[in-house]
Length: 112
Length: 114
Image 1 (cartoon, chains in turn purple, blue):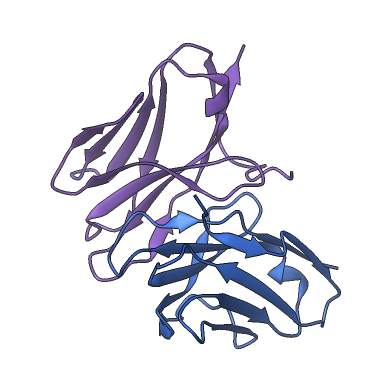
Image 2: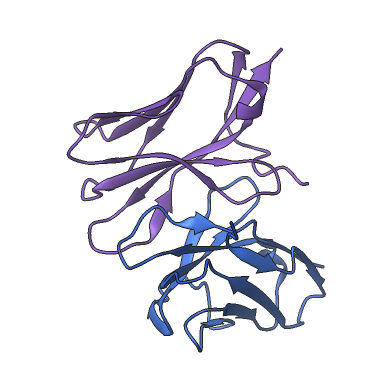
């Protein structure tokens, strides 16, 4: 299928290394944050989320860090695998409505 | 299990034609969202339904865009008099209830306007 993000910033990581994808969000009133993974031709797939009363949350091979002071979010992927190749979007949800505001995506490219 | 289903997966239309895009949310999901994703960009919110009520349509780009969900399940996004700038992937998402996260996305309809 056609690529989702032809002009997105790209992070190239050696297979087996850890990946860190960074994101700046816009709304200081947002109280819920999500990382989505989007493969070519597919819809966004939920990876991990975090609420604004936390600064770190861990999942399986993934960790999300939230720094509300500088409105920064990061996604860490441990032991990156070929299947992790995709475009990753951070997203925020306001405390007044349910719509998701997506950030600029980052393409993760895995080097063999 | 069954996820969010969208049809058609691909739609090609000539400029000026009307198109209709369908979304079947996950069974029992009350909230339904439409997003537009231009090439190389993140999805952008279009409109939101809670059951059959359209509670937010602030993201619809123009009055050529119309969405409905008459029975509170299947939703249709209609674009009238299509223009080339309407070319994008249209994504549908659903969630169990208002305020419930995360939303579950379908794989989208890729619309190309010639």
